[in-house]
Image 1: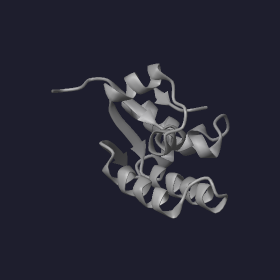
Image 2: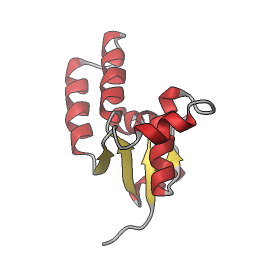
Image 3: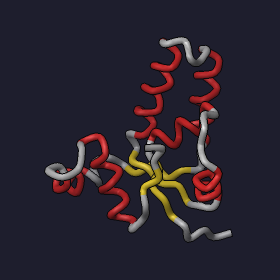
Length: 117
């Protein structure tokens, strides 16, 4: 089955999927029927967030380990950072640095960004 619906997901959405926090049905349906793309640094952001949730007592060590395995298995195309840097830099006056790589990828793919925020 060829999917034409391409979306860029950020770490907040992936984190919600992994830890089972509230995510609305519309977003879930949109993700289920889409080709997921993200800048490769998403994995580091998810890792940092899971580590924080563990250190603050919100997730057990086993839960984090399971979430990391699930994250690695997500059917998502991860795009190398160097190919996005020029476009991200051009956006820096108007886009927060933390969002610039996502917006650069979304622009490149002509795709929307799906975020939990």
